[in-house]
Image (tube, rainbow, N blue to C red):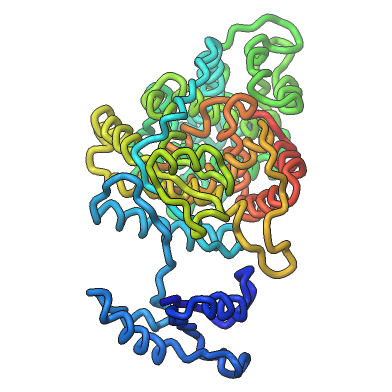
Length: 530
């Protein structure tokens, strides 16, 4: 029995209805059922042997009832209840629960990816195996000896700015005192904004060094501002809290650009300096930020090598330092723990291979899988259960907070990542877009960078509100610069997301990549430096 299920739109397949009928006609013992779930084909194709979904499913149920134990579930005739068909082959023994997790994971991933990319996607076959014998762990780049020092100095600057607005330093009763003049712009802000500034500044002070050592922020409950944060992840909240402080300082700058922040805390002496135009403190920073940003920072330092205290200089410096220091913190944590061993094997959890890949063909051959037309003309996703389970067990053994998590989420993260690769290549465009991907199949560092950036950010974005997985994926993306670590390209998308343009930028790069890999690479690295 061959079952053709359609919504009446003949745009999603290379085969026409007539092709299906002709092929069925060559098999006299084959019964063809064309199920029209919309009930419109009788009008648009009156000569086709089609019936409505309910009628045909009842007839199909009668036919199949004699040869299978479980009959067709007629509840699936409701279009809204039709699940995505998931082709899945287990090359190793799997229990039903594992199979169900994979099937549901693919269904979740397909719906998400179609919405994110704007492409229609019929999922490629997902193969479940134990491990990939031909692949080896990726070596995490060793930490730069200067990295910790640079992070400490950047955090020291932010620490000093926050201490300036400590409630013990400034309050309403300073009007008329020597302190008032530097803060008169601040005093013109809305009271709620002033309260939030003091609260967040106080939160950052005790958490800053703990954050550097462990990557875990201070208890955030009493400082949480409703509607401010894009994620429940503590590191994201810490970063966005600082960005909120920066926005408030920009408001003060607009009120009076000549205001200078003063106070004993901001003139801290932890900066070593020599009386020359550029402070030696920021010289080592140059390799971690781009040239334009470095030039701006040099202008925020006076001839004595101290940070300028005018509000304009502080705002400019913070705008550069906040995103830079968080990228470096993640990179430092990736290179020194707590996830280093896991990060080296995450790429072994699964793989997508386009049609004709020799790697997967050899895998199927070793597993004695009979090659069939069903999987011959498309790419394949392979999930490696043993490798994934070993990593999950290690996470639970080493990290207490992972004890109450479920391997289903980790499995889903791999499914989202690998099927993003698949939809990028095999997704079907709509509207004015080209139907199929035209990009060349050539490999290379640039192609790998864009491909992994797309897959890694799609995965990161899916788990934005899952604190542990977001942290793990973001740390994985931060292991090194894009020149050494292609997953780092996802951070470009994440930076755009915080600027409220992430989805649009992701889709524009993806569409470019499907047609011209070099153009997509230029789009992604237009403002390089991570």
